[in-house]
Length: 179
Image (tube, rainbow, N blue to C red; front, side, top):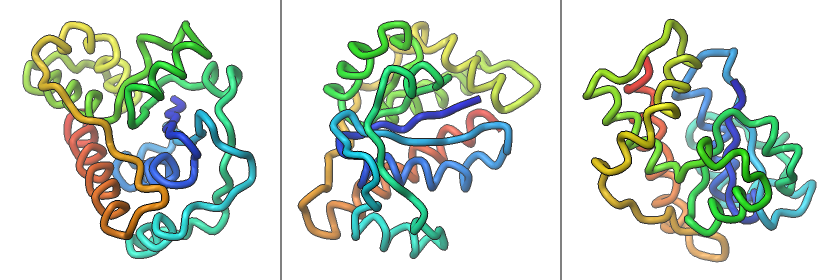
């Protein structure tokens, strides 16, 4: 299964999602990557994101940004983004991914709801993630409205820490739901 994290520039939030995913979901058959709706290819992770990853014991030095393309989206089984506008950009680029594209906090809430209601089925973590995707439309009316994860680009370290904390919490929620 291929998970794709998408933010705007692919240097702040989505790289953190990509790099933190294996800490939450340790199944090697599930790969996480990232891209940006307006990203430029080949940029390193933002300085504050780098510092946060290093605090978490993750070496982000090999990371390089890339711009989201139709092909990248087509190869994703689940696309997790951080803003409603990004979701719109993604489904405009790849309309067939509309049912597989979520704001990260929405998907976390859907996973928790599906786990609580015992909607999650499957023998593997990938199967259970697919189960959340399949049941998300049923869960959506029961879920709280979520805010975007604000873009910390150009802001102070506290803005990056807030984005990081949100990503970590959402990934933990997803992992707890599909274990």
